Image (tube, rainbow, N blue to C red; front, top):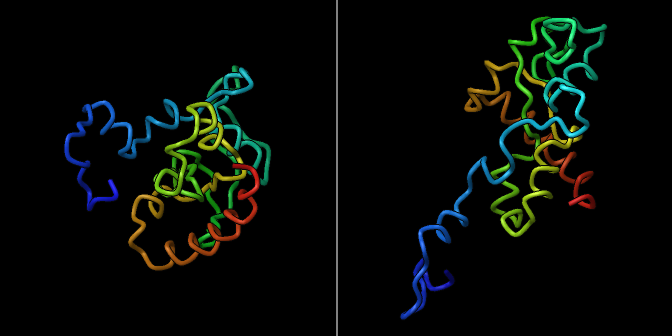
Length: 154
């Protein structure tokens, strides 16, 4: 695609090849994984790990975290209801795709997407409205520091 977004004359790409080059969350697995098979996916493991008090689960299976105590890295607000939180990638998956993850194996991309060191627990309301300057500014500063730490891992 070095010819201004066009394939060289006489070359054709299948729709499958074109789709493989376009970012999709699906290239990183089917969502939060349960790598250790304990019924908690990455999101719930990170919620449990980062709560400043013991967490409460939806039921005795202890798969789904529903309450705990988390402090927002953006606003310093205390959140106790896990439904008000997102597990967000500090280094966005789309950013990694544009910078070489498209060449990684499926397994390596899924590992990256589920790496707890690249996950930040943040209020859903802020995460879903990244146009707010506070969120973007904080996220960029945190992201730069984490990218430095992750650089040798991927």
